[in-house]
Amino acid sequence: SQELEQSPQSLIVQEGKNLTINCTSSKTLYGLYWYKQKYGEGLIFLMMLQKGGEEKSHEKITAKLDEKKQQSSLHITASQPSHAGIYLCGAGLLNNNNDMRFGAGTRLTVKP
Amino acid sequence: DADVTQTPRNRITKTGKRIMLECSQTKGHDRMYWYRQDPGLGLQLIYYSFDVKDINKGEISDGYSVSRQAQAKFSLSLESAIPNQTALYFCATSDLGHNEQFFGPGTRLTVL
Image (cartoon, rainbow over all chains, first blue to last red; front, side, top):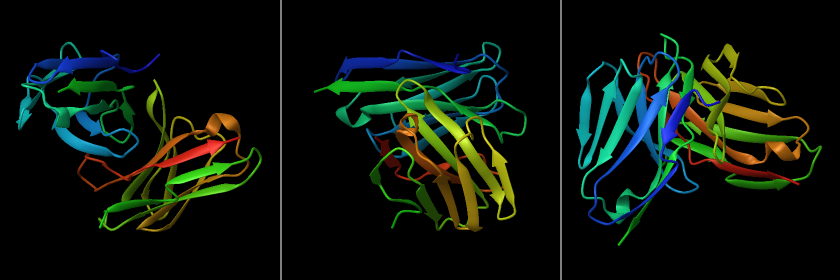
């Protein structure tokens, strides 16, 4: 089973709608990273969260870390077609972050 | 110019052939990584290297080998390719003391 579970696996939303993607770890998290991947391309770093309760925003994307629940959420406000792609969470599961694990990804489609 | 480059971008080969995938970076990072991505499984770490003299196995190293020819170059070899090695392969780099990883554009490998 995956050490990092992402939900949903895929999401189709109408342009302008808000959406949330979740990432849950089965182990203690030492740093949580969100990446975006355009289909068939490399990963682009979005945000890193390190402390429980931490929340970061970049343009219309906000990520939060709930350390107690070993979970992070990525929220997109007023989605646009440019937000489409695959969102992956990654986490250091040892306390030195040398051993990274990634979720399977959430495929987001935004309909104009 | 891209900071992390991979060659080739696409490769189709036959079972039993030896294949080398190359990664170069101009970021000056000491740490380099090789991942494979399969649908529904996210990214899995194959090998990683923290400097030219350091090579470490990741979670799925069987059937693969690597060479760190220089700080800027990290190559992945499949000595005898098999069909279940068909995947998208990514190289990544990170800087000492910083956990963010920078990814190359990926190599799509098909083993027939």
